[in-house]
Image (cartoon, rainbow, N blue to C red; front, side, top):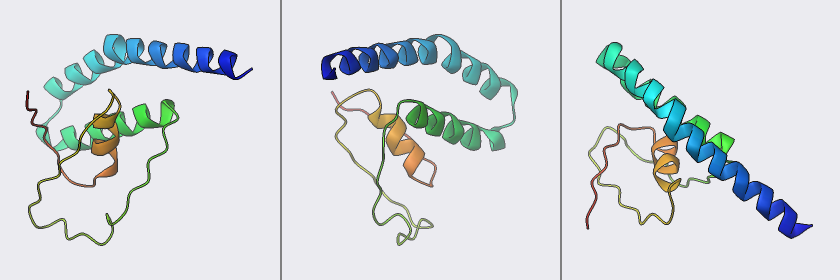
Length: 102
């Protein structure tokens, strides 16, 4: 039974990834290019929160409420899979920009 559940969950995740890359991301790209810049952040936060919700990933954050977000911070994380970027962007209440190192 567990193997069957694992198979269908993996299949669901692959379909979600294909639909996100093929349908959602281009639509968001078109919306971002048309809409004014003040609407970019809420649109991206909504998209990342919906991806996290649809993938059934539970995210726990600690210390977000206690942090003074008016100051500047460098947030670093070591990602393991494709969804880590979405989790980080959806869970932090600030404007985030990514930087990768090879």
